[in-house]
Image (cartoon, rainbow, N blue to C red; front, side, top):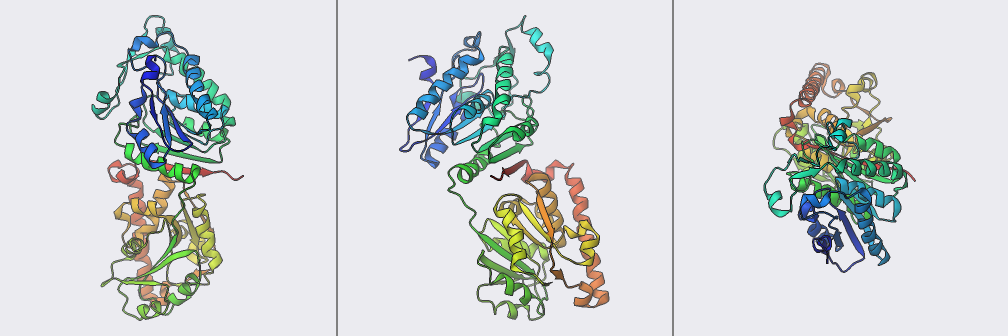
Amino acid sequence: MDNAEKNEIYLKANSNWEFFLIHGYTGCPPDFNDLPEYLHKKFNANVRIPNLPGHSTKVEDLYGLRFNDFYEYVENKLKKDIASGKKIILGGYSFGAQLALILAAKYPVKGVFIISDPSKKKFPLNSPKLKFFMKFKKKIKKRIMIPSKEYLKKINYYSYMPLDILPIVEEAAEKEKNNLSKITAPIMIVNFKKDFLSDYKYTEVMKKNLKSKKIVTLLFKHKMHNMFYSEKFFEFKEKLTSFLEECIFESRKDSGVSAIIPAYNEYPRISNVLKVLSNMKIFESIVVVDDGSVDNTGEIVQKFKNVKYLRNEKNMGKGYSMERGVNATRSDIIFFCDADLNGLKSEDVLEMIKPVMERKVDMFIGIRKNLMQRAVHLFALNSGERAVRREIWQKLPSYYKHKYQIEAGLNYFVKHYWSGYDFKVFDYYQILKEKKYGFFKGFSLRWRLNFNVFNAYISCIFMKYLSKKQTNFDYKCIYHFKSS
């Protein structure tokens, strides 16, 4: 048994599924940390990680090896596993990501996930002058972007990088680019925005050329290249699991939709909304949160037997009530709806929920036919009717879950950190505050609302630059589902 075979990782399972993982240049099979064991147990799948030629020994063993030496080695391994009836999911890190993509274009794999693809390199690794130095120098000292020495203890780490890597990666990049259009399997692409080696912008080139119907991109903002021993490894595993369950194994479905209606003194109007929502089968729960009303709002709500009624002992604000409503449900999709609407139809509600269920967007906003919303687009987007993924709500900074700042905060974070939102103007409308409460009180409440919204948007501008307040949003995960 040669050294490459000896250092291979193989975990056997009682199934035909197999994760075939490929490490990077100067890496080794343990590079993947505990991911092999996790995938093995979670999905009852075989896991194979070949040890590439020249690895797990000393860096000098890489001298003279070329692209085909690595490619043919993993291809032969993959062909044997496919011939034995294995359903293959390819995974690759760095140079291994390039190999995984080239193989995915040639063989009938079930899915692919790649991390830190170096096909588009950053300066100085993309400098033509570096090739000149290859004539005089065989290797260079590696930049260690590892947050812990734990990584170095677990693997056979090469402190130097042979400059042979440059023509190898360039050849791999050319083959990868020429074959992207042949990849049809679901794919997840993971990058670091501040990766010192790989340029994350190459993802856009990949998305344009891939023929995959399901593409998920995950972008971390950190200065990192190795995912597996970083502080982001746990979050990566969560996102990878979601991708595998939803796009490949199809074992994970959204657990349902819940409707949340915050209400304050809506006795004359709330029944119009509840009559529509309570007759819709799509909701697994409907929750009204009474924000300390002093009228008979509670009596009206409790006439609807399939509606859960919660009451705040005192007026706490819209954001607080929405949060309490979400905490009373378990659904993956939340539909928020104001309580003072006229003309709302079940068809309107379904049009807002369906794009989120189909992952076309992460949030959909219903815009009312009110004068203010027709006149000012910014105010229109602060409409209270919207479907949004629960995960987004949970990660939204608590600052925005305050009074009427909530919609502006959701709009900003879904636009900048998720797959965006869509909206549509519907025929339903909201009763004017001046009519509900009288002109002077209604006018005062309207401008207090506007002041809250203004504060929220000012905060959004500062949040763009003050990264300390964005700790819950240090990555961006986007699903791209192409129609057949």
